[in-house]
Length: 315
Image: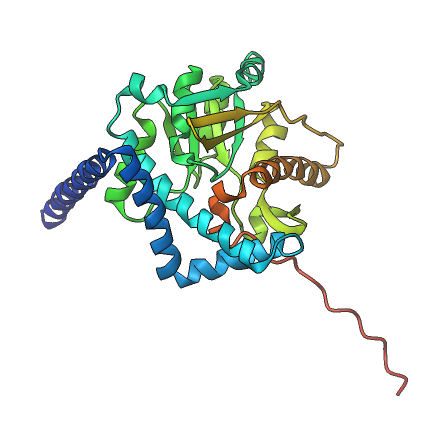
């Protein structure tokens, strides 16, 4: 009885916080455009100043990637823009809650729609390669605009009210979520129904989960799951990135990345994962300020390096 009461009370409590967050975000999103945009940038600068840990991570990553091409002042300026992008992402998500479907969709454009159409015609589902780029939280809008069922693989949050808000945000136009943990079977089922499955492939993983691939000329442990799925199912891999521009948002859909099969599974995983990583690096190099990954310890997992064998002593 006590446990049942606790579950009910916890559900009511969680629902109340979820509702509060949702409505508060909607109020923030209703601010006039110029106030909302300037507030987003200011919020990013506040985070930059107050969050010393992620400021150090971002500056170190940018220095490693651009130290030979940019001065410290230029890197600091880019670092500030990266944090401003984070603030804008939050304000844009709040803004999106104030719009119905037709009003929201007017702010989005799609380039390369035919690449997705041709991939979908194959009937094997589509593996959508994407990243924490631009405003990735609005990617499911693109799924709705394309008119195909769209699933996104994600890591559930620890705070259940915020988790409820995120799920509600990402599924309100017909998309769906697949929890990363034990999600392999669900992904296969979605592909079997000829659906789109989005995977964000730009974060560091443990050695057992990935392979080391050059990213900005540095070895980065990269999730091998997308390559495994493509090799197992034959589903085409299509890069899709949602970038912010002066008129709203543009979804860039790139041509299918050809699948390499050599007969050597380990080699195939490495070759294909490298091709997927190159696509992410290409879009980040074009718009480095719109990649959230600079705040992430992308190169944290290091390759195992054996100590050199010592020659036997003559004595």
